[in-house]
Length: 111
Image (cartoon, rainbow, N blue to C red):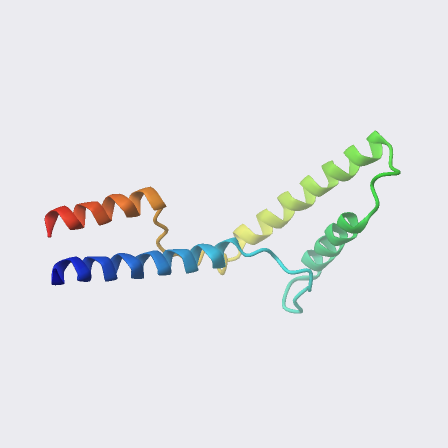
């Protein structure tokens, strides 16, 4: 019984840690622009927020497609900028739910 409670406790700890890391990794960028970012990043982010706040119901199809392609280009530029920084690649271990269940089952069987 002690082994079972130990395995259960460890599995709950692993789940809590993985959920916390996934939530931090998936958090969205806030609309506030940080002062430490580069000026081009601030300009691109400001343009994205401006496009998102536009009323697109009165626009023609060509204008909407132009905005969509502009957003794609900005997203690509921001992604390339973020890839060049090392703070985005903070490391960590991510375990899927299926792998976690298999690990728990193996621990129960082996112990």
